[in-house]
Image (cartoon, rainbow, N blue to C red; front, top):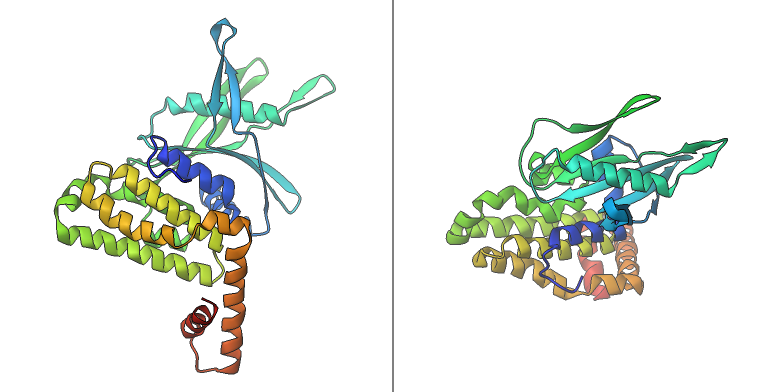
Length: 304
């Protein structure tokens, strides 16, 4: 979290949001697998580290991007997702199957001379490239018959900022810069285009602030997203100094306002957000002419 540049910045960003922010993960699963989980669904995170046996009895350590169970209304379902920064290639299915089986074995059980395993619902978030299919398949031919299961494919190129906010896919905001990757060299050399990009990120911050105020997103997750946008843009624009500096100044300025992770763990951030909300509601109950924005601004100024 403290290191801005990393060769694994994209994986780090995904794993940080997945492991820390339940309110980001639920809409992500709903989008990927057409689920309808509410905010009260419970997430039980699984083991991300597995060892896969190779020839010569050697073992290779593999770390999945995410493996977790969702419990909702008595139903339990396992999920496994990978975040892929390259364009989709069918060879990814080999890795997905290796991970799927290892995750399934973690919760396997044996009864009446039978091994029972549940293959997780799987998906790949593809950060680069286009495609005209949203599923790929793993097919197993066994002595008892054949079985085929799908792996969902979702691409950043399918989403613009409006659809990200409409679907509450705030977890994907750090990766939005990939949709402009092929334009970054031009933007880097053109001041007007650079300012258009800067304005887009200023608007993202404003919209994130609004969804926190509306209760769609926790203050903690808001801070994590800002940090991860900063980290991903810094890495992707590593050779585009103007883009890196302009967007970095915007996002980095917000990061420096508060160490959001530490504050959350000490309980200060959520408490302050709750106090602002209560005070704003009190102002609005006493003065019907106040707009919500005015009431929140008054509350923030008093509590700062």
